[in-house]
Amino acid sequence: MRLEQFIIKKAEKRLLSYRTQAESVKREKAVGYQQHLPQISRLYKRATHWHGTGRYHYQHQKDSRYEEVCEDKVIDILDAILESDGLKPHVDPWIDSGGKTVSLATVRMHAKAFARIHTYERDILLYELGSIKYWLRLYFLLLLIWFGSNFRTHLTLIRTLFRPSFFQDIQSWSSAIRKPNKKKVVSILNIFRGDVPVSDIAGNYPILIGIVIESENLIDTIPLTNKVEKRSLKLIKLSQFTHIEVPLQKIAETKKILEKRGISLPIVPLEFGDLYLANQPLETLAYS
Image 1 (cartoon, helix red, strand yellow):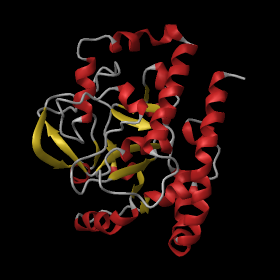
Image 2 (cartoon, one colour):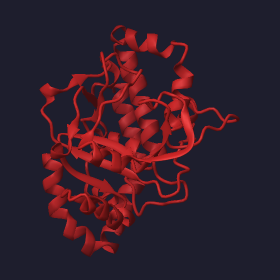
Image 3 (cartoon, one colour):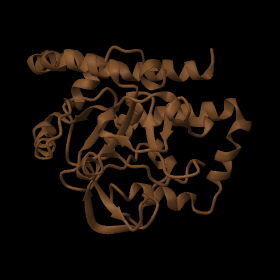
């Protein structure tokens, strides 16, 4: 058995309890879930890519999450997206794109992991198909396997990992959702162990965006992440959004923000999206 299949099989067992829980939550929220079901089915068939973000970020000094953060100054990301008419490209040192890009996941659960870390540390979601720790660990293991399967294609990534600013870039990336703690260093290893950063910004919450775009308009990332991520060099316009997903308790708040700007977009409870996918094979959820 291939190592990748072995990891998926082991991870599938750990996902079983979440699948079982989904059935009880569906019964508990039957009316609301059934009302959204036709819409979710239609939107998920239409969406080709996904982007995960959050309501708030700490502002950085320049137009990149890899510059020093301006502590205590919070910006409304949702408002910025609506103001810009979509997702603006940004500088990202992890890939050699030749410019600014927008990161787009090829599967929902990958983008949801990035959205999920924006959850305010005291908030709990009604339901999740696997914890944030579960998904980050799974992707960490899969990336290691993909890395080892074709070492030569990852030479660019290897040079990236050994650049002088590598650890600082990780700190700067996490500082967008959480004030830097000089006594506690965020690292990939710490995240794998379960010390997953979540937001300390009160009122913050995950935002998951469904997007429809032709693949020929996108560029590849590093070979390591091609299965789960593509990039756009251009603005992803609001007209390319299929819908927005936010936690159930934030639906009303998000609707008011869109209505205030006269923007009409379907808004789906994030938890109901997880419920809808609860019976999908893990391989399909993760990257297929």
